[in-house]
Image (cartoon, rainbow, N blue to C red):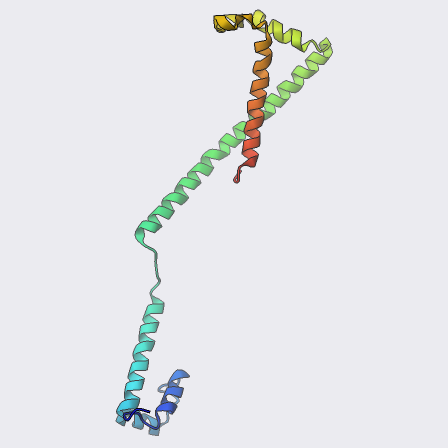
Amino acid sequence: MSPFSCTREPEVRMLLERGQWPLAFSDELRAHVAACRSCGEIILVKQAFQSARTTSMAVPVLPSAGALWWRAQLRRRNAAIERIGKPILGAQIFALGMILVLGAAALAWQLRRGLEFVGWMEALPRSLHLDALLPASLTGLNGSFWFLLPLLAVLALVSGVVVYFASEKH
């Protein structure tokens, strides 16, 4: 013990730690605290720490204004992307459905005609005069280009669907 400590100091500390100041202190102990410098300082310091703790707990700790603004902008941008993405997804599903219906109709039509798909594909550019759209270097393909074109379109569609389902957020 230091030479400036009081014999009643442990009792005062114990009652303070329990939060019993000033209600549980007897009149005799209150009079002692008022007269004893050491016990009075203990109570003064303890009250100062308690009031500082109370005020620091009451004040919420907010992040910086720049961080709040950045998060709000990020949320707004993500919400806009989601709003835009919904109609696009609907259009993609509609387009896929139309392609499947047209493909099934074309297959049924070819089955009724006897599966002359290759002959039909070779005759299509000539009947629609699509040879005029091709460069002169591609005119000798003899219809195989027009057979390859739908296959590339189907490959692009299937790869788009695979990428869509492989992405993390869909």
